[in-house]
Image (spheres, rainbow over the protein chains, first blue to last red):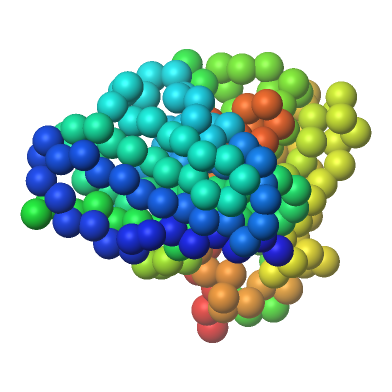
Length: 107
Length: 120
């Protein structure tokens, strides 16, 4: 199975900060990666797919980059509603796997 | 408006069965693959399985942790996807989500989730 490792696991930041989360795959997954945001008690929300394509309706402060084994999710200017847990997911074959999550907290 | 609504969760004893339903509205259900995910209390997301649209054979894929115990099916006439869960274990306790899969892979619409608790 393909393992995904996110870093950091926890991130403390202030409103307006630029935030970057990294997701590393244990093998080449091309651009078959998605990023999700999840708030407590809610279903996850798709932010980015195919590594860098912004899902419809998602604010442009979110961006994704990378291919192969290293990927990043960047929030250009953190907003109050962005405090949540973020997950990467690989979709290069089965089983689909997730990173362990990155919790973004208010500093 | 696209809506996915899971139902059928609840408390069940180990070794018993449960069937979850995912009722979809607002899109042409038969055109899309559907996935199930779960999230144990306080834990991360886990992919459970996937069913392709009939155009792609309606075939299924499963996580190793559920293969042979869980079965995903679909009724395109009713716009419902099912997750049949047999031989349930305490470690199957989780909130279960169904999703519509964009481009056959990306979970862009999610239900609200349904809690399954496996306990004696």
